[in-house]
Image (cartoon, rainbow, N blue to C red; front, side, top):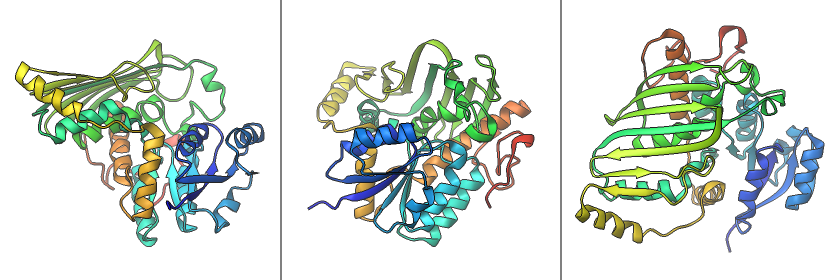
Length: 364
């Protein structure tokens, strides 16, 4: 019989999507307790998802011995401390994006995990499990894509004043960044998931849409370590919301759907240069076995990683890759220069990419 893992959830916003993901994996997980400072939303989620206990005492979750996993779905500025407490209390941890507020905190978490062997931390990057993107990975792994040339990714969404009425949004101290960090970070992960780490970025960023502290529009030119190039554009001022991914290889072009929040899903279009090669691609895709995607798939894989003591499906290094791109982009915006990666401890923004006046003491 499959072992069920018990999850304590912290948060009542994006936590609803996590709960749906756990709900689709009822044979793998159960959620006995939810913690949220927003009692109205927290109790409503408990009722909707059949959670027996509601609390506002975060520390009580860490002290319990009947929980296997702490799921952190809180504002970004709280993530590091909650993850640290979760690991140090002997739990596994799931944490929403963006994982932390600096590369220093990512590296410090690596040191914390090294002191607690067997404890696993999984950042959330659920978009990579869409069937369209998984088919592209299949074609690459099968040798049918060829040499990578160029990737273009558009994250063109809309966020108006109502969105920023939530007190922690739009502020460096609590949201830790703008659309580049909180919205387009999924695009960064999908870029790295397909091509590996970035090598260099040149970035422009601006605040054009709303009267907030952080950026809501950005344009990035990226060199990848594998030799290909990429352009990433992000705006929260697009009245027609779309997300678009286009991967150009020597032997095929892969194009996503435009649905803004499920762009990793089918139907993607895979176009070869010849009829012969198209037949090979079509044959490979015909053998693809579809499964769950999104949070449901990521949680399913995390369960397997825990019970079989494997590496999580999304790793701390995956989060570091995406946050390195954010860090390098902010540095490029402020210096007007291309910025190389990886970001090491001697980089000016290693401990924080926040403006000087907004910084708090960093880990490490």
